[in-house]
Length: 234
Picture 1 (cartoon, rainbow, N blue to C red):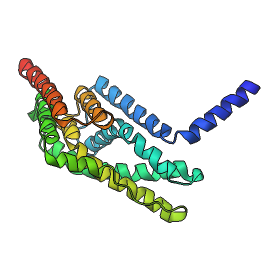
Picture 2: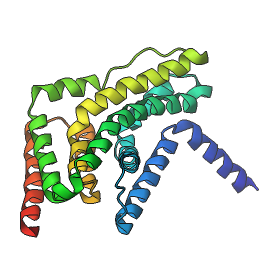
Picture 3: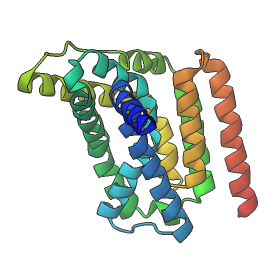
Picture 4: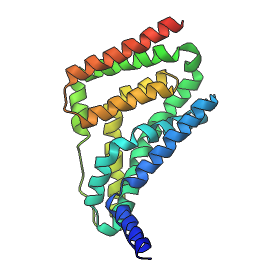
């Protein structure tokens, strides 16, 4: 009985002290759904289906990059509101990516991107764009925007509003900062392989010392590898 009690206490502590845990579970579920779709070769032909696939990619790739933001907004909220604050933040954050995905899903279907562009060459084009973005002065501005925060109210609907607004701000900055990585996924027809590389680059950009020249060189090598694979397959 004592062991069961301690185990329950430990789970409760984990639940409250790691407000990002449920978000990581959601990301893991999205990754599993993408793996299942890849194995079944299931790719929607309509804009609504493509938008749902887009949101799966966002949940899988972008949510793990928000761990620090989730922890921050939980720490800045009342203890009893930690998970509610995190939920509000993620609602605002994902709504931005959802809005971005609507025209992209429509264009992907309307212009038959999957049939017009080999996925390897599409990934290569996206990674070349990412390398150019890393060398652009705009990249530094976009990266600095990701750190912007706003004051949060303590209680009531104002607190919920502020958390959602913080999500909107972070989502907009993240979309501006990370657009080349999602372009890789779009041009590669949502390729799971390209997605893995894009996620790895996004994670490195957030967690390793900044050196955009070095990073651009690495991304260029990745782009050349995908381009070479595309040429050889053709």
